[in-house]
Structures are given as C-alpha cells and as structure tokens.
Image 1: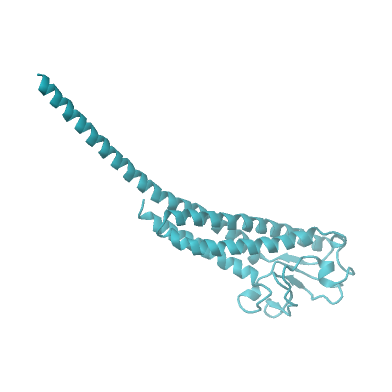
Image 2: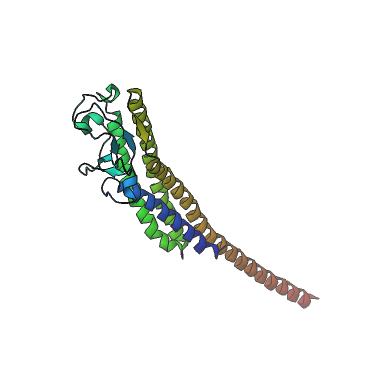
Length: 248
C-alpha cells in the first residue's frame, strides 16, 4: 500500500487541478471576452421593453453581456463589477419592463452575492490544496492536510453551486412567466457541480493516500512487536530450561 500513496496523491492532484480550471473558467467569465471564455454565462434573458438594456442580456461572473447574433458568443459586455449581483432593477437602473417578481425583493441579490463570495473562498482553498498536495506525494501528513483543505474547498464550492442553481433557475422561471425568453447557461452550471464532484473525489483519495502509509507503518510495527515478543519468549523459555537442568 505504501507504493500506492504517490499514485493516490497524483490522482488527487489531477482532480483538484481539474476543479480549479473549471472554477477559473467561471470566475473569468465577463472579465475576459475571448475564446473559450466568451461562450460562458449564467443566465440569458430577452429584455425587450426594458430601456437601455441589452437584448438579450447575459449575466456572467463579472459583467452583463449581450449576444453576438452571428456567433452566439458574449459581446458588448458592460463594466466589470466585483460581486455582480443578479438583480434586474438594480442591474438596469429601472423597474420599467422588469418582471414584477424582481421588484421589491432582495432574494436574488443575496443569493448571487453570497454565491460570488463562496466561489472565491472555494478557489482560495483549492489553490492551497493543490500546493499542499505536492507534500502528499511523499508524506502521510501532507495527504491528510490536503484532504482537510480540499474538504473546505468542497464545502464552499457546494454552497456556491447550490446558490447558483437556485438563482438561475428561479430567475429563468420569472422571466419566462413574464413572457420573456430565458435560458440557463449550461456550461457554467455544469462547471460548478463538476468542480464540486472533483473536490469530493479528491478529498477521498487524499485520505486513502494518508491511510495507505498508516497501514504500512502499522504492519511494520506489528511485525517488530511480534519479533520482540518471540525473542523475549525464547529467552524466558531457555532460562526455565536451564533452571530445570540445575535442579535435576
């Protein structure tokens, strides 16, 4: 099992790295308008009837973009806004033409803002897990430490994915109920849950790698203890035989 620890650690590193790549694809959407990032968005909705709004509008991680009709890619993105909320009245600066379910509520605002925060926290711990995972190649402690940091990344990534799913599904339904065309960005939603799955599997394999080393040391310890017990038993047995010989 000791020889399997580097393999398990390597598999874990690949999983964490894969989850990180998907996180970066998500976080860079709207901030970079080049391939393949310009394919990604959370939610697209027609915004006809809303003054000064792109039609359709695409919500990304950092900006609201339009759609290029010839390529179907993000285009004409607005200013990069940290922690961009999904809140159409706030996004467009008007309530005219905005579905009434978005007016007077902060539900979507807080769902999207907390998603933003949890995504960044998950990203930070995933980076730490990737760095500490190098130690897991040669150390049981490194494996357990990496499992801990990956589990924290998993926790916040799962929260971010759940919040993302909630606001994009609810937002799409509200737009559709008001007669607007609306679609969920399949890529970013899939990336969110794929990162969650990758971190979950990496946590398990990091733990298995640490346990592999433990099993080896436990086996060596038991063998040494058995040899020591056998030696002591032989000594006692020989001593008893010598005593018997003296009295015979």
